[in-house]
Length: 376
Image (tube, rainbow, N blue to C red; front, top):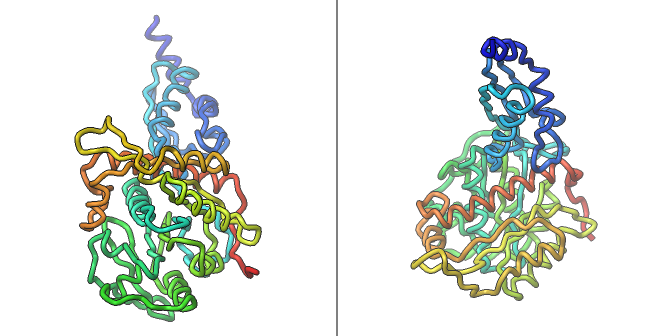
């Protein structure tokens, strides 16, 4: 009789019951349940087996296991403890773009990686962020906007390579290089690396506009833009050309870097610009010697970036340790995200996970970024 009772209970499982149970599962970042957010679809119920699909806000979502476990627990607790639950995941990367999309029409999110000063590892952060997102299943491009000091050709091992041209509509378009699953463009791919780029501001700004309008980026979930240090012409050109989803600020813990990071934050917070800060990441947070990961030496100070994020009430995206393999990978053209260095990769993956979560929250809760028409 007991077995018959369970069997009858199984037969009565319905999509309505399961949806009601899943209405108790919160999306960790957006603060609403999966049902309200229309993130659940494609139900299949067969006896005590149930499967359905959860639509994530990004393929690089770091919370899949958390969401899966919460769904299984809700159904087994509120519907049937004998239920066998299978959760599938797909992604529909969120976007906040509401412009005419005359430029970069297939790009969902445009993220600028900035720093107030040079030497803080901004290009290393941008490169490995792009790779981490791509490894999570996202379509990613990396634009090297540092016209005077391009790093992408060296960091990705493509020195001396040249992009092809392809007819795109009425004009010829530059085809970005494809390396490690991401699309790359840099001025270093167009000029001899032995020659200095000696251009006045308008010429550098013109190159950035061409990287936006004349490069065949096609469909991307994220276009990561490695910006030059400081707050100058190229930054102004970018916000006047495309609607940035937001900005990731890179700093190191010492006071000199923090002072310049404040200037970068202040620039994008100006009334006439108003580009959201996705968050701040602290690079070179501490040194870990090859002898063991338990030893930490705070060479540049301790938690300066974390305190700055708290001071400005912006998301803190994590700490990246100073590890020799990170530098070596960039120099030989194999960034740490494609290496076997567990410690360095873990730090980068956690940072990338925090970044995509912050982007999803920005898209859900903040107004769209407008292209800046005039800057006084």
